[in-house]
Length: 250
Figure (spheres, one colour):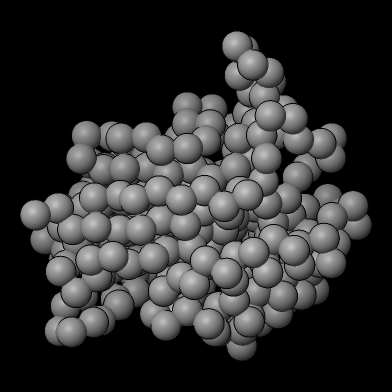
């Protein structure tokens, strides 16, 4: 399903007012959930006509895949969607995507697909003489991460959209001056019982299970993602394509 939300950001440059951001996460390609199973969701995502594609990790299930090969296949699968976005496509990686330390996932397949990886890095989007900053952090489970140091690569007065796979350390991003944070990782719990809530949430994903949260002036959005992990079932927790429309607060 497509979940549409409109978010107001005081620091959003006027040139980016109305920006349509497609947020996808947790595809988890594996034997039980092959690339073909994702095609309907990606076709639906294409209909949203986004300006910008942001991907927040876990493209594979590390226990059932040849990591580098499956990651490359996922990048290729996402290429048509990425190339349709006028402002480009950017990705971070989740805990299932990282090889043994200290290596990072190979950037080459993603760059070939028109998707720019961000590994504790900042990218600036330019429009009509104004800039919007995308900040991508490594997985908090897989690597040591210091949000304050990474966000310092962007101007303090700028609008900084932070991509971090795991949501539970969002308060650190708020304290470092993040304008908006996007996460996945939780799958919304996959199985959610009415009146009880998610039966299980992963480490670093227990505080913010799914949806929109406000940490002071900083919104945090946690998507339920597209894929699943064992047990391969969702209940009261459908897969999600997220379309965020960003407005400048005047």
